[in-house]
Length: 215
Ligand code: DX5
Ligand code: ZN
Image 1 (cartoon, rainbow, N blue to C red):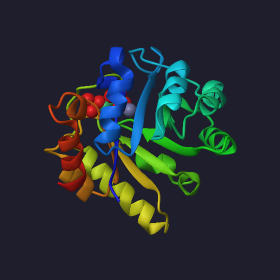
Image 2: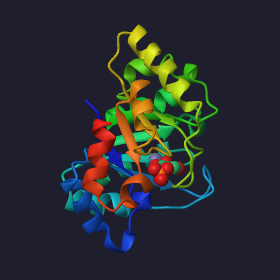
Image 3: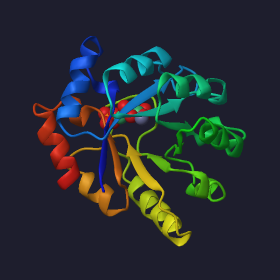
């Protein structure tokens, strides 16, 4: 089943609740929250209070993408604030096994994101513990960037690795996902699509989400 996780980074933050209603009514499955610390990535976005606020207004699962250094310091707080899925960047974790276990101990779904240049093989040993792997198809830090074409090969290789190990791990793709390239991304094996600009800058959010699912 294809799931859509609209990235709030592209929404109108002055109208956060209305924006969330639009994606709920549009049939989104998750709400993607991009947390940036100005250290792991060259940008600062939102944090714990926004996750808490979102939890109070929506029943959709909160898909929290931590683009922050040393995420262990904040995992418990994000879990308490209401994150349902917690994604850490492999590059930010010195002890990835420990970090993944820590997320699971909070009773949350654990996911690991890989930057474009990071090899999927770094996940080989922790893969059985993960609920989802996030393939970054842009360099993290900003919305509205172009999909990096080699990401498709990476998704295919990851899918192969997951199947070979007999796992059911979700494959999420984030960055430059549009109605024009979603078919290729899904055919490669991805089943959770993050889209920011493609959704929030479209005239008809519901129609765009439908296309992202059905194309
Ligand atoms: C990039 C973020 C993405 C981004 C996606 O650092 O992780 O979630 O906001 O935005 P679009 O879909 O506009 O590339
Ligand atoms: Zn993201």
